[in-house]
Amino acid sequence: MTAIAEVFAKAKNENRAVLIGYLPAGFPDLTSSTELMRAMVESGVDIVEVGLPYSDPLMDGPVIQHAAATALAQGTTTDDVLTAVRAVADCGAPTVVMSYWNPIERYGVARFAQAMSVAGGSGVITPDLTPEEADEWIAASTAHDLDRVFLVAPSSTAARIKTVTDVTSGFVYAASVMGVTGTRSAVSGHAETLVQRVREATGAPIAVGLGVSTAHQAAEIAGYADGVIVGSAFVRAITESATPHEAIEAVSSLAGELAEGVRRRKINEDALI
Image (cartoon, rainbow, N blue to C red; front, side, top):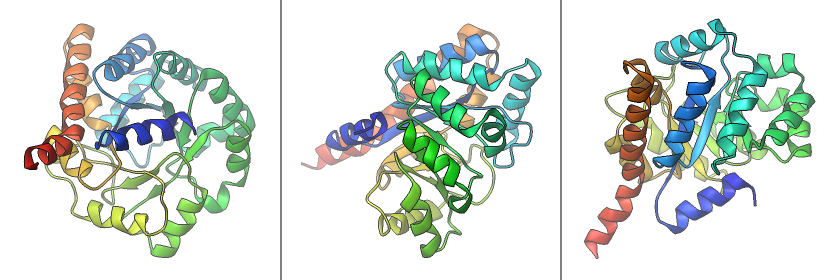
């Protein structure tokens, strides 16, 4: 059983969802980003998603785009991202990298997989890599025991969902909306339907992302999904902080609220007994 599978199994036994938190490496700087990720773990995040900054982030909204641009302007490299992976993995949380395919391909697919494994990474999310073009990555990730996470969307057909889930390991990333990342006042009504459709194709854990920013939204998703993914809300909390200390406090507070949210369904069920 992989580290990611163990986290989902533990959460299932506790009758709650897994909380997955995203931050780009190198934002607001490399040292601060790793400190912030570790603070997320200390405050309740189960799995950390380390963003690999990229100059053409098609899936990302303005908040994450700005953070990635800041990281790139400071010279953040793929090796720096791997350093962040090691720092977070050392504190005991399964750590995955979220990366567009181009940086991995430029780094070298087999080289990247090996470096991730050496750094203690657990897997990689590749939002723009399709299963049909993933043979090299499937081979490399398998060779180095890395989970590979592919995405499904509300527009995915049943056939497409089956194609994606057949090559996915760790968990399936269910994008709650068509569009870019960003906090929203409500979670898309398509998310629950999408999760139900994915469950027909696989027994793997399903995590919902895009648009989650509050404990209430996290609790709502925890009612039907195995994991809740939060990114833009963490980045915004840092952006709106005046000092590094305030940023750590803001991220820790948000992580704690979201962690309470993914556990709320259990509390509600206990109240009914």
